[in-house]
Length: 163
Image (cartoon, rainbow, N blue to C red; front, top):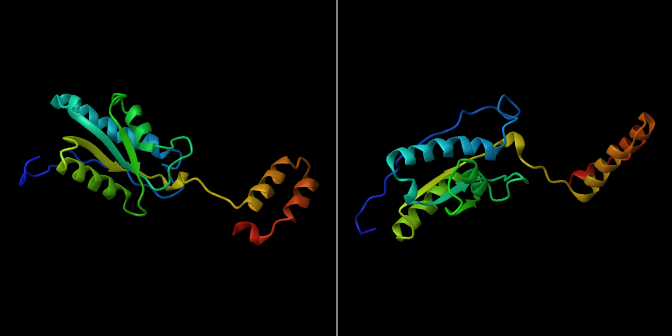
């Protein structure tokens, strides 16, 4: 990139927004993101630019356990070639913008020409992390078979399990 050249945003899309626990609650973030990335990538194919795609950068705060590098999972689900690298960035409340900023920096540094960048979240599917005491309590609750065993275990619950 020469000094003074401008960077252009070629396409912009967004998924429908829903309330947490609402109609989109069953859709994981990687699936949601792959719909949009696939649409954009198909446009790249229409323009004859797919071969010029340098990288995919996706911002995500709460990556699902089954998609540890959600950008890579999204790229592959969208049909992007395996050879195109993808990485995920995390910045609370600004992960999508951080992905775009990373893309701009790479283009300005002549490290890339075309980057697919954006962000994705599914707040209904954020993995919950529990303290080991809470985890143990939940495991014992699941193992309790009878009503009386479940009740006895339930009475063992302490608020400190939630710390």
